[in-house]
Length: 452
Image 1 (tube, rainbow, N blue to C red):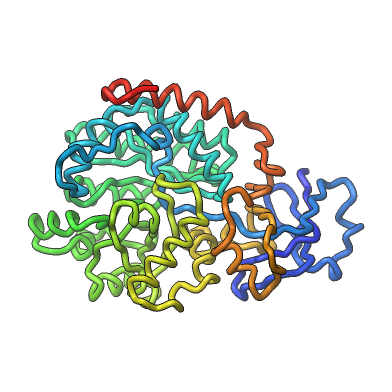
Image 2: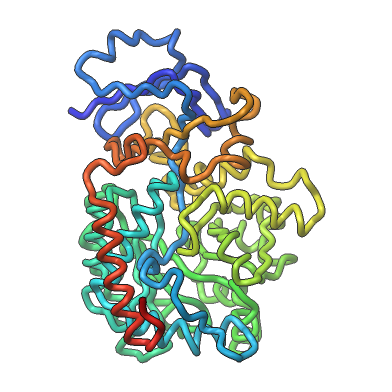
């Protein structure tokens, strides 16, 4: 049995009472938290014999962060030597059609999906992200692409919810292959109910015909797996749906019976803020808010109407960054700027979006998202390098406003120590990045981009 005892830490539990424990202790057996409390209330000697003792003195102990949206393979296209903008006026849909689809999604190989995903997972772990939700893109890498992404998930040690981005933009045959790619993975790994699970991934309402969305909904019901899809990250989603169906995307999805509590929608930047929050709440739809990714593309999402309506909103990376610290700050700043209100998105709530709300969005709140007895041991230890004392009153502000990726000292996922003292325990990080660079150059060469 794998046993661990974390002692002397300042524990931010993010439980329903938002308990914070000074000189805290967490006892772990295998993948589960068995005991949590103060050092004075627990017989340390009883639990310390024959276990791995982790001294968290001078450190903050927190639930691992949960990223609700990513394209993990995109490590091979980060910092590319070509912007895709050329001399054309920018619009997101034209950029997708001129650049992203033909040069990236349609050219990525299975091995690039593997090594890019693995490299991104390691970057996520270094940021304290213990659970990632991935939508793999690779229109001509199917069938079989998800076997390579799954391999990366196994090797990384991360908790993952995987999917393939099914699209109807190429052909009926290709969309059928994409949906089947999801189904095959779900049938392969979901019965194990383990660290890695899968959902059905859908691209968007504008790239998928109604019959595909209806079939995806039916398959998700039959398999009990849930659905993930992009939603209104820019205005084109609305224009397209109104042109085709005479209604905005949310009403369209409601009318075809697509919405439900197992639906996680990414972005939701350009919504009908008068009506959509009510519809989302009625169907218990979840949102992955990708604040930094949206800001990079000049989008200005507004989550306040959804949060006020009681809709579950968590955070995602969208592959643009590994740092959940940056994403928490960006989400906070975007909304404070938009409303000119410095009290919006308080630190405790933002940290909750990166932890507890993320677990609720994935319907995994009984397993992850907070540090409580009976939950999975997904735990991060953060260095305290503050110039002022950090304690119960200001620790959440410190995490949200000051911490950086370099402060992530130790990462435990499913009870296993994946990162210890800032170093990976069982994987050669530099070898992964070296292989990713080779695959990136191969992809860049195909597109005629500058090479090193």
